[in-house]
Length: 273
Image (cartoon, rainbow, N blue to C red; front, top):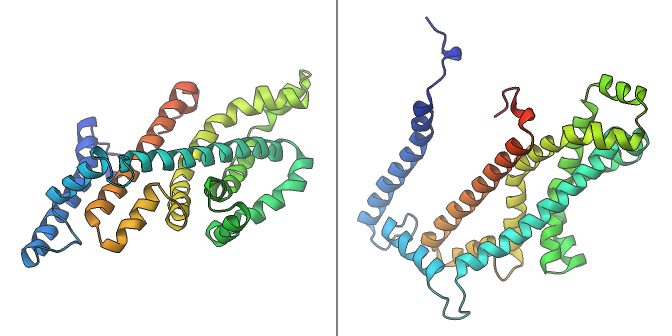
């Protein structure tokens, strides 16, 4: 008898098992919505799919009467620009400082304690400070994302460099490689795919910091729109926006995974996902 731990579902079974939880959640929502609307047709907590569809159409395909913009796309573009810039800056800092800390003991002695201390500061606690220092514009929002995830990326990259086999570094030095050559030709190629993995893991936090910043001070953005319409209990707008954010996060994660697979195929030969 085959043990449960050794049983692997087929490709079709994996797809069905992946869809099943979403289908159950959808059925549960439909059932709960029908019950609430039957008791109170004006209930806003769980709107019918028809109301959600009308709200999506209005936000995405009808120009706003006051601004003339298609709000869903304007909000999406504003949020993605902030998120992209914040994640890019964080990734660059993680790569440069993390590799330097891991490869050069002098850098590690001076910077590692500071990075560790910064990583322990709750980013949301310094959000008012960022607004005071940088104002209510784009800089403070990007800064919050960067401060929120850059220390994590730096520490992760530092640890990945320290985990590289010491024999590789010794052999390269035996062949006459300089410190700069060691970093560029031995260390960097091995940690780049790990950086992409770390960025994927940090995307959830990046979205959290983005939504928080937009909710407090913004004139457009997905987080701004959600917190704007909550005062009217407009769940027919809030729910689609939440699902849209989830879809954008999933697509970003998927694209990073594809980029890693195609750029570093050797990284997945060991059975990585």
